Image (cartoon, rainbow, N blue to C red; front, side):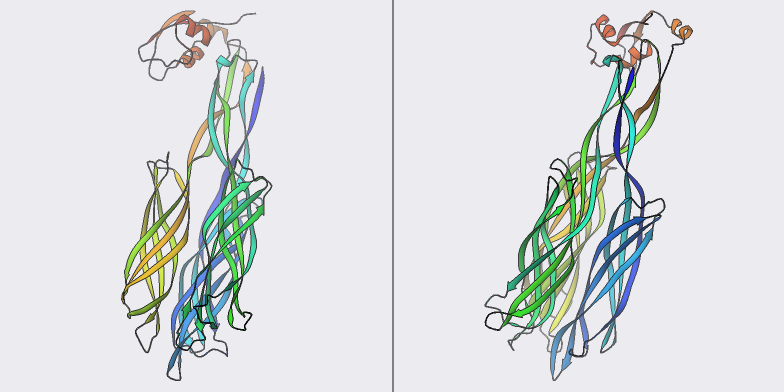
Length: 521
């Protein structure tokens, strides 16, 4: 007899870790800008563009862009201005057991940012960034798939599905475009801020490549050259697409991609008439792509032989099974009551979403978190013409996930696809924020498999002690196969003698006639 072996590829988590890093620095007001009177808002965007494993640690790099809007007073007039800074990230996280060839999943999220006005020309910022990392590797386990030369009836196979990551790649591509202001808007006197974000992400996989597409939301905040305007705001939607070459990509595989704006630059230029009405955009989109596949595995679970003894050497196999995947979009509706100066006009609403808790229940995934919305508006105040109000909105969404059960794991990615707003009154704003959620539910499972088999002659004395014929009363857990193995009987002959099928289930109390069978030379 010959053992037919199967090499099973498995993902194995090598180690996990998390930490917080503190980024701080000073922002000096340029000479061309007036002094700081008060700060409207300070925002930051974190982008980790590189994560590499080495012996016992994960090194990562990226940067944090800090933008500050402030008010300045002079000549009996209050004006709004912008200052910004870039904090570079270059750090590492110790994780025991990881090696240089391991894959790394690393996420950096802004946890908090504070600022302090040092003097009228300098502002100090302190930001806390959460870092979460997981290192994993692909390993091989050798299992016996079948025994060639042994009757199929005397072999019991196990079938299961394994979900494995087969490729992981971080890459980027650049988008360049020009956007013209609509004719009903004043030309630009000074660009204050230009938020660039991604919405409506779509990812598809083809042979040898991964295609990504979506909408780039470009939201410039600027001072118009019209003396009657305080601050102007416009939002543009630019569809984009890109392609990443990944050799392991295949139409039958699954793809997950995290897209973020790693860097962006928006500059104002004149149109054909010389008016400053053109926004020139350059944005670098970073993509963290993971390709996985489901593979159906057949291995030998048990076997017996009439001719000789088989010593089955068993091992346990830990693996993950993909239960379901789901893309979900839902809208958060909230009327925000602002405990702040009354609003004349809402200019802009920016939002960030944070997932704080994920629970897997029967056929569902429950997601809870917090939505932070910054409402920038023109206030009914001569001293403070602009005001920024921050609202904290709890979010909860129940996502259909067929096959999900308690104890399973769910991977969640969340992004804001759209924000719309409407003033209800001077102190109330109706917000409608559309969130996109990508959900993948996996089950951790263990399967015993036959790693190797040793053959040896039967212990004839022990075999002779078994009766040649016996009447057996089926007990709980008995099957026709287990009875045939226990009494060294031919499975098909056992089924024929008792006038049942080899696949029939036994009923507790059912009587069987069992005939021992030993092949003799």
